[in-house]
Length: 81
Image (cartoon, rainbow, N blue to C red; front, side, top):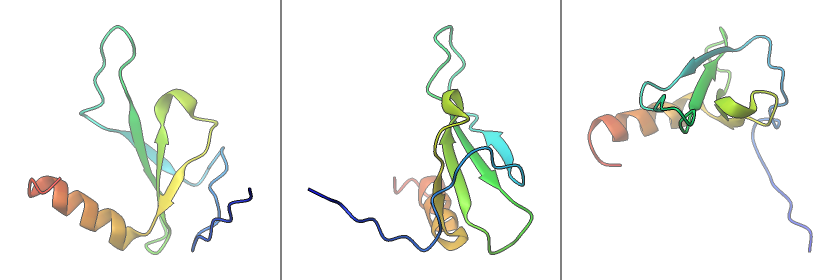
């Protein structure tokens, strides 16, 4: 079976040198390293926001639109998620 993924943005391949990464303050820093998520953004306003596992910095990064990211953050802040 073949699954075709259609995306507006190309799949993010690391290293993403134009991206500034930030680790979530809720990732947990316990002795096991925690479940860490990093969010990356470039200087370009219309560029997709990237999300990756901080333990796999050379792995893939999920790309979402800035509008979609802002909607997600707003929903979390409002307690809807």
